[in-house]
Image 1 (cartoon, rainbow, N blue to C red):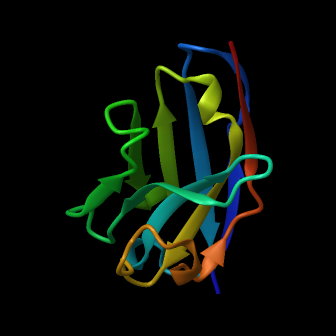
Image 2: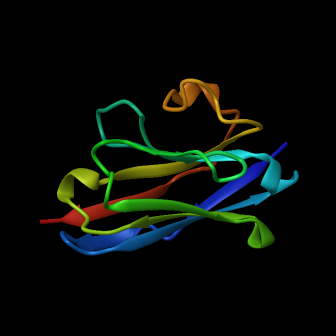
Length: 125
């Protein structure tokens, strides 16, 4: 089992930045691929970014490419999502997810095995 706890959400103005954290416990963190998804009110959960176990494979949704960066600190058992140039359309609950290996396709949320409880990000215009 892997337990995931997100933090770092909040209210920010458009153009601002936030860094989300996802702390993992339970299993060897370095052996897991980690992803970020988000869900806005009335919408389906959507892929944001994902990173393979070794970090060789990193993918982003087109909507966040160039603005968001996913990173992982194995020593701290934590994965991060640095979000810059935030837009009101980035407003959502953000979830981190884990799987033993990078799923194919990597953007399908149902392929990930472990999920955090989510953290709210609100971007005001």
